[in-house]
Image 1 (cartoon, one colour):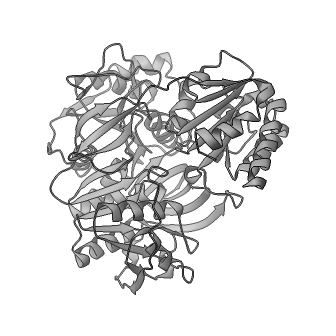
Image 2 (cartoon, one colour; image 1 turned 90 degrees about the horizontal axis):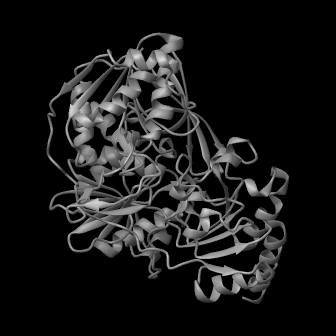
Image 3 (cartoon, chains in turn yellow, brown; image 1 turned 120 degrees about the horizontal axis):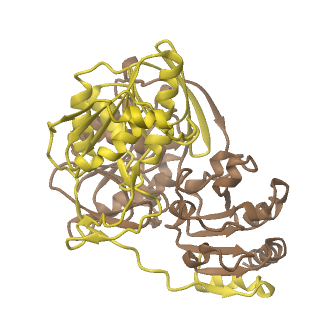
Length: 246
Length: 317
């Protein structure tokens, strides 16, 4: 089974969010970057599990500049066989999807996996775009994935509903919690990752369709109004009369 | 802008998010709505109250479930039919699976998960898991916009919509997959991402047998219940109730967190709530910094008092 996992570089969850250049650029000073958790914990780990039980290869692909190297090596340390980096500082989801699709067309992948969204841009649309560009079925929000030959059985968790579906390879799947458990790379994996191949390719598509004009930070909370536990019932009056939310 | 808006049906009924996105679309410009699959009698006419005068209905039983490919075909063909330059959907599970396909097939710019109406040539969405906003440049050409649930309060304008049957030839190849089964996990409650009020419990409740006080308050408020990650991971509550970074992101008008310390991963899923109430016996719980109202105290004493007060308020109202 030939698997492609799309990984994105994202700031660690605990990062302080700040912007530079007139609020047009994310400030990377002091920020620790990680593989986007949905891409790593669920999509990549499930792909590795499938490779371990069924055989085959796992390729990771990232749209990013040279500073993506660290997260790509982590994916290789976890067990991916090789990596492709599209040398691009992505400006929107379309750019990312169009370039991954252009690469995927040159290979015959059975399954292309993405996380359900990135924790920085929070768009959640690259998988759907890929499916349309490659004319493949798209199964989003997948929380369980089992393969039987060319048939894949998937559970999808959506607004209060669990849907079980059956899809044929090749296809595009977006992953969420439940599909696999996070792994930690072992020493052998880390050593092996240093010599695994990372192919750097130039982007085919550089058009920006919906770029960011400017970033903004939300207004600071004005402070928490504390209520004594003995007066807990007064909370209800405040929520009704002041906040007007009940 | 000339708009086509997707009004999603679930078991024959319009979703709350459908009302939101229809009202949002009507505010932006002249709008035609499209509904797909079986609808209860009189259901689609109700969209008139949100400002739309015409609803195109593809009444095809094969399409009662959402299939991104088939729905894309319908939306793109309907958009051409009505001369739309913008297609709008909710940024829920259905919208997130359909919109990217529509944007590619239609060669449009996609604005995913916006929070408000466009202003000064841009449109705002939350980024960095609610810790910042990005204003996206609105281009001249075709657009696909998805609206975050609970981000736009629909105005009820009155009026009734006329329904027109729409036939689009959907072939077997337009179905992405076969649905084997559908399990309703909601227990008849409003889905968590659509809920206006959410009461959420954490490890401070000490065990699943103590969830009665959460459910009582939620019941009195007409709220949905949620939980923190550790509680879902140890099996006290079902996974679909887990809000936070790896669980689901919600944006209710009121979020009441009980016995949840407020780890940054939890905040990432709830920090867009309009008003946050935190009840925790630890005065140092980080959640108080993100809260609007706080009570330092024992949930088992505090919650029943609040529930009683809510019941009293509702009985007076």
